[in-house]
Image: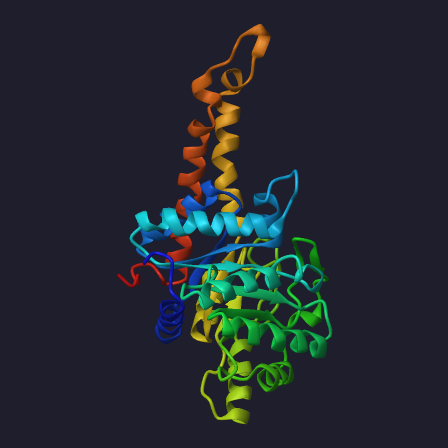
Length: 340
């Protein structure tokens, strides 16, 4: 059962929260990066989350049509087959989806899973993200209510982002300023609108200074201790201890201390994309520079097929990215915690 059933995915998240660890959520854009993520999880003996953004899905759909649903479905079906060879369990997730892309991405995917469940099968994806951070909180939560109901009916977990994450990802951008911090009032309004599990399970991407992109440690002011305040504020009002399952976005460049604090305060999922993109690409650049005269037809020569064969440098890329995924499992304490 390498692709988690809805029941197993819930168990995974419960175990992470109870054990104060989180699953790396690795963005993939190809069959090769998928294998790299799976390999990294397997080598770390960690379960994990594989995710596809709208941009990733468009890329997977091919540049002739650029169809996001086709791309996401194709790689998800591929994952259901190849993941059988890895001795770990993974959940499939779709990353950031803003309002203008819901009809072309998340809503059709929810419908596909609803049909599968109706036929007695498991959903194709185990969770989907609604990124309403560019909307007012009222509109964000109204759409969240609609999507949560559809997700729950299809045995899917919804991820919601209620306040902005700085930087830019797949066309969604926010300035880096004081608005990058979720307030207790924001969290209470979220609980009032979406419930605390009785309307369907959801993951909460709260903001504590998070920024997408490439930053050195210290260049972004993270306040992961804020998550404890959000948990306490909602717990006091609703009487449920540690009510939220948090997601850590924009974690590139975070210190190990910041990650540890986030884990202690309820983070069960951490998105990793920028770092794994670099880890995948770096071996390719290294190979091309070192084998310049082999990968190109220099001075009228024919080059060397062994050096420009995509399998040659592709294997190096897979190994590089897998190593970075394994490191993430160690940092997030999920290494060695696999279900089977």
